Image (cartoon, rainbow, N blue to C red; front, side):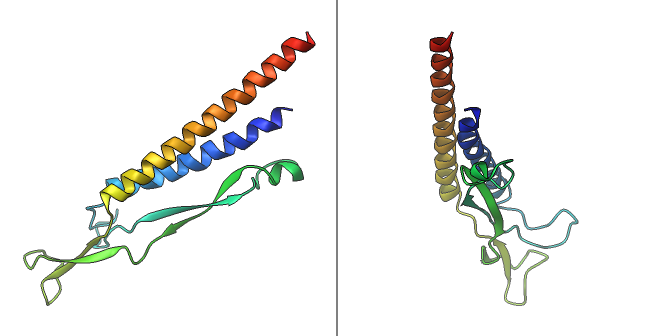
Length: 138
């Protein structure tokens, strides 16, 4: 009976991972260098979901819920910006910068937050139903 809580819990975990990727995209939308100080413009991360929960103990549990199937790096998410004074500018005066749209990322963050909240409400409804059922049995 408590396995029903696994479904909204898996949804909350998946949306949390999605929101973390979106936060990283927003935080690094102007990042031109990697952690080692090398010129490598940040590339947008995208989270992909798949049905089921591979970490579940039972076969029926593995068929329910959702999980993060991949976190993909969008290698095409760079654009050119004319800045001939930049030390990394090419012979035409252009540098590569991340092509991350802040508005799109904020809309995605709002959608992830709403989906997370919906899963919280579903978990609360399940817990409430279970508590009422236990009160009837007592």
